[in-house]
Image (cartoon, rainbow, N blue to C red; front, side, top):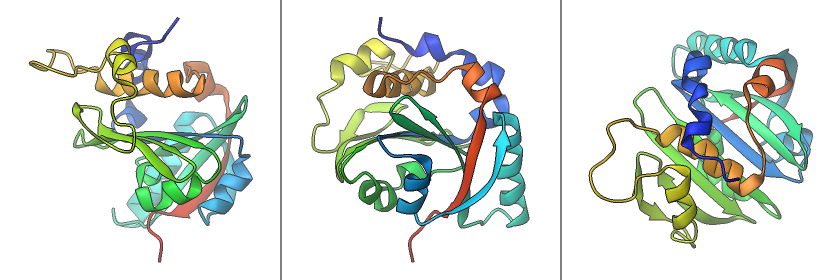
Length: 205
């Protein structure tokens, strides 16, 4: 059965510290070390649980005076996919980093920041298939912007008319990512995983 936004409503309630600003990315068939290499990153000490990862990421941001160019990433393997989690980050939806890194594979990423600005990005082998702001799913770009319209509606995106009273765009992004990858993000995965960690620059130089 297809997951919907309702299936991910727990995220904001159970993990409020990361729910206000995050980027989740799933990459098929690449081990964490290979993803790090494609992003030009360097390995860091592992961290257990999303709380430790979030605390470490925000501490780095604060130490950099809110203008850090490096992002802390936590990674784990789920089946044939590598899950990347960036607390307060957006590298996964940065086109000039994500598209080259998606060469030969699938890259599905969704992001939101403290200002409720968001992005959902789906790339295949260096080609941007779909990109949109989850709060405004009617405005889409990419090579196949309408391929997932039916799925988007069923997962909980509001595609026409007045916006709903309760905004479920962020949980709908989790549901859409699960549809594309088969990977379910669960509370247990976030709480119990010892994440392989790395840092990578947001922008290329």
